[in-house]
Length: 243
Image 1 (spheres, rainbow, N blue to C red):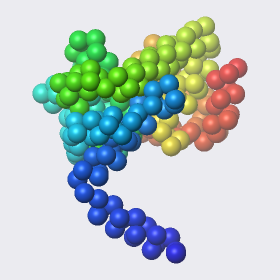
Image 2 (image 1 turned 90 degrees about the vertical axis):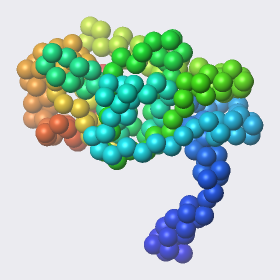
Image 3 (image 1 turned 60 degrees about the vertical axis):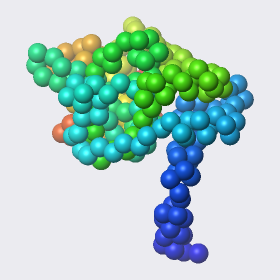
Image 4 (image 1 turned 120 degrees about the horizontal axis):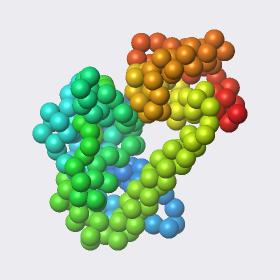
């Protein structure tokens, strides 16, 4: 079967999925997003419980998702497709502090801690999310220990990754910090964050960051563009980061 016919068959099969089958598929995908392994296996009843609680939500480019002008919308958001930028309001305007990609989970930690989400989110492009309301999230964790263990392991892993990243920045030359940050924030070889956001994430002045980026560009490791940085040589950036 050629590629065109194979792709058409996949689309036809997807179109034949019932609503319940699509929920089960999405639930299984969420289970993979929040962790794998024998330490927290999920049974069919766990996946079914998750499927019964998730709600798909679609957003157009630039549309608020949660927080700020989106009416807060507390809950757990899992990005199914597209990208979401997280931003905070400052006296100089909104500053983007992160970008969520497919598979990323947001909102669960504030719910577990009983804290408000510290930023607002809006769609970078046409985006589909899977949503769990606060009540559904609480009941899911309370009634399904396997889901709870896996979800809490996911939270711990994300926190450990964040802490490890902060520790790795300590005492390193700025060029090594920048190279490491670019590798961490790249999505398919492109970093879609403005320089002022990257500078804020590193705690340095924007001119200092720009000087380092220009140097990396001269070395042929990156290409600087408007609101984006293309990574040309990942191995080269890793060598700079590890130096």
